[in-house]
Length: 168
Image 1 (tube, rainbow, N blue to C red):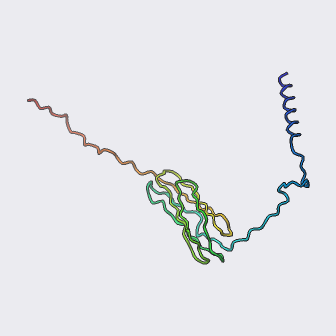
Image 2: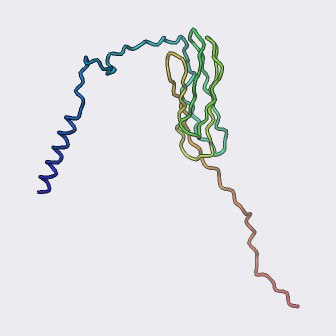
Image 3: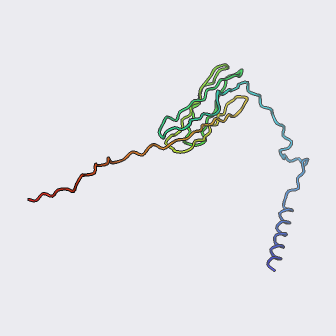
């Protein structure tokens, strides 16, 4: 009995939902978005060519210098403007040139990784620019090895015999 009531309720709800939809057609005078024409954006003549897309730190020690550089050249015919550089997390901080890079000139994107974090590294930096190639993704990889643990207290030499008591 419960199944029958639930099934009838479901069918009634589905029927109500179906009839509640608007019955507009494409030619009813309302703007449905299909009739809009796309305006083509002019293509940029700037072109970025990276020397490398990945930097491999290899094995580095905790606290070592986590800086690296990605060099690039503007092979296009108009100035290259980098609009945004963003690391994939807070431990990866990129620095991109603020000024336009003229055609034929080069620049550097600096990336600093926080090497206090022990373990494998695989992070990305997203570079947005007016280059015709669009968004570029740079990556860094490697492994941060933990520092050896230093002893907090020096070890005392073990004594050769039992302490001697003075009697007075």
